[in-house]
Image (cartoon, rainbow, N blue to C red):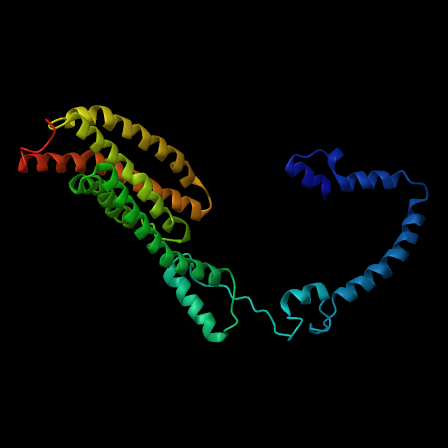
Length: 284
């Protein structure tokens, strides 16, 4: 049988363990007598092991090994640990909430990674909103101190506000939902996304009125380069197998790209419209 199998699989008989054992046995003197003595010792031992393994004794808490019992039984009050697996994909927040609600109806002692994840998500939503508001107010104050003009501060904020609106649209388009990881990217986008508009506006104030082509030719090229390097750096993280960091990197890329496009197109359009409405304004 071994020889036929070797022929089918293309193996050489010299590589067969069974045939090698057969050849070694054939080289032993008085092989039959020695094997007979070996079988008399082996068969009763194997029989006892098989009977013991085939025991139909009922498994109870008394005959479970202690190292296994300690993993599932509370040593203080004897409560049993029951593991419940969700039927639906719990990365969906609605499914997670339904699963947690169903398990908490069974026992108030329910715990696990999903409970902790849901708690962290609630805290991030609550504290994340506060962080976004604080970051937004800080950015506005810094713009007012730097530009010393409410109008120019409004212009500098326009790409950021527009970019933030586009983020939600892109997330809906690509079916990306907020989670613990990517929600924390929003305050970071505030800090990164404001840069492009500020640079464009500063250059426009230096060059003066009707200088948008010059601003876009030089400063526009500079912010394009910085945006591309940022997208390449964070975009590489979107290929990660871990969904959390990949999702965070994707949302950050959405924000950086949206703020750049808004700075390069929406801000110049607003400046042009404002110049037509108030032709007397400007340094030149």
